[in-house]
Length: 208
Image (cartoon, rainbow, N blue to C red; front, side, top):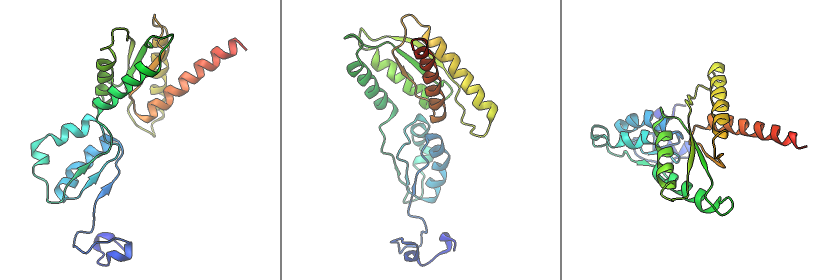
């Protein structure tokens, strides 16, 4: 049975008695997907709860008067995560205060995607917060294009090649980075972790 055509909401476990068949939408994790669905939810008057939407995608869109001030009654947007600036400030504070190397701030390399507003904003906010400390240094900044085309083998290979080259470049910095801050999509972070693990496995084997 189509939920939108159902009249017996209790049959579906819904405690609803009005004519509206949808109480709200929970999900659309990435901010880019929340951005796509926001106008539809706005016009339909349906609440959208996006627990992990944090990027400038959504913030910029909601600031547009033409969208936010002309929604159907019932529309609400709720997110639980801190915004990008707050997240980066917390990360910078943790790195500076908790990851000391011989009683000094660790040298940091930044990996970010300049074409992604959220990634770019997170990286810049981290830099702004971290470098307020006189002994904190950003020793490398690597630009990564992390398009999420999950079924494109060529795209995955290109991403892997870019990240491995960027990692090699960052590790050749003088001084060498001791922390990598990488506000990238999950698929890119996974590839970066694999590249880091591979490098350190090779180093470890030299001393085995």
